[in-house]
Length: 77
Image 1 (tube, rainbow, N blue to C red):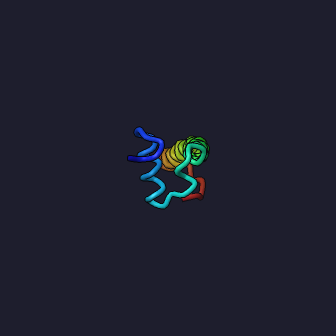
Image 2: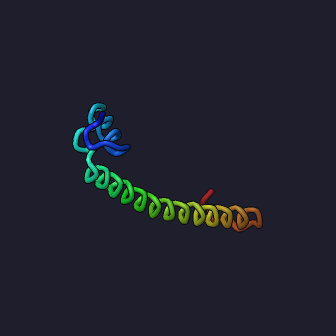
Image 3: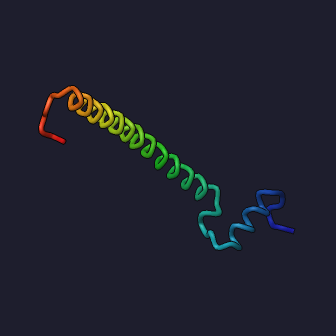
């Protein structure tokens, strides 16, 4: 029988045996989840910025392409 009993005790014992060390405690798990949430929030911000840059790039290159087709030579391409 696992000390502490129940599912939580079994999971804690399994985590300690697998070499997770301090991450096996509830505080360690909470810290990892908070860190993961921070990484996800920063990633979402950077991805939204990247999408805006891609859309702006498509608009600029498309506009230059159409102007080039119409005969306006901008000397860029």
